[in-house]
Amino acid sequence: MLTPTSDVPAALEAAVAQYRGDGDVPSLLARLEEIAGRATADELVGAVAPYRTVPEVAGPIFERVVAERPDDAPALIGLANAYWLTGRGGDVVGDLASRAIAADPANRAGWHLWALSEANPRRRTERWEQIVRRFPDDELARATLADNAASLAGAEHDPVALALAIEQYEALLRSATRADQRAALETALRTLKGWKL
Image 1 (cartoon, rainbow, N blue to C red):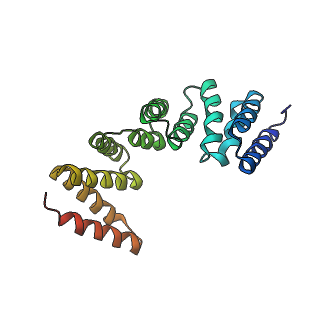
Image 2 (image 1 turned 135 degrees about the horizontal axis):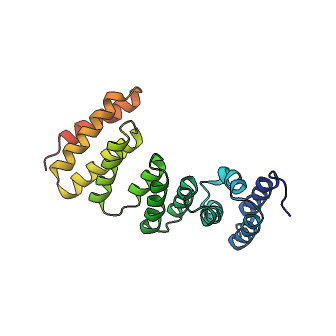
């Protein structure tokens, strides 16, 4: 039986080590269910931190945490990310991301997953644009907006999307400090400015 808090990370580490050795998903899931059944949500959140990018581990753990704490934005984001990595679909991920945003509108990870989960290229670009307006210093969101706008411009021969992409790449160039970043952005801008739509 798991009693001290230190037992939860050790039990989870042992379960992951065994899974990495044998690849037995049903056995992993059974061990995770046992661990989750004997631990608090706080213990689980702390123990799963090193495995957030291992969806077969993070997913079941965050499912338990979200069941116990349905408005916990970081847990919702952890579950949405695990589902995204396993290809559970944009609707499920988008719903979890929307719940995370409602619980904590300042948490950018929820916004990023919300935008990523949109399948329609135009609506996805619009979502990234909303994020950049809300978080103007979020360079990852700005770069993703620029990339999505450029893709939309190319696919749909859309001059408005092209202008948006150029505007975002120019903003990134103004704040870029590394020579390789500046060179990549200058190349992208030269290419986009040469497009004839």
